[in-house]
Image 1 (cartoon, rainbow, N blue to C red):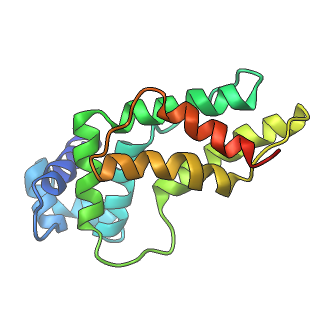
Image 2: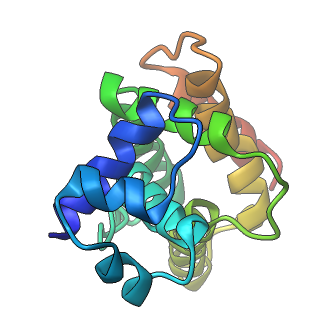
Length: 171
């Protein structure tokens, strides 16, 4: 059932639907609207859940190679590989286009924040110098998403260059 709901939301967002509501989603997913009202307080909460599912790999363990540089490089490559897949890129662009109001927090950013924090904690425990989690988000994650949102090229070496740039900030 959850897959049908998420798929329905993805299709509606991808088609640029003007009005995404619980009844519209429910009809597309083949479920009763009550199912949606019971699980989510509003459509925005459902959109956030779908965004996390579509734009992060829930439960995915972050790399643990013993080196922060390699962990961040592997992680950035995983993110880049995932969000550049055509269906993910379309969904990401549609989600951004559907946003009208500024938000105080973003579930996708929260998930990436926790992943980056986990890697920097481990690196600190090993005695490595680490950038801040915010530096990682601003200088590795954000540029990857930016390139995808604006359909700019993202070559295979781009994630590694971003990692090297952010690590240079710690020296």
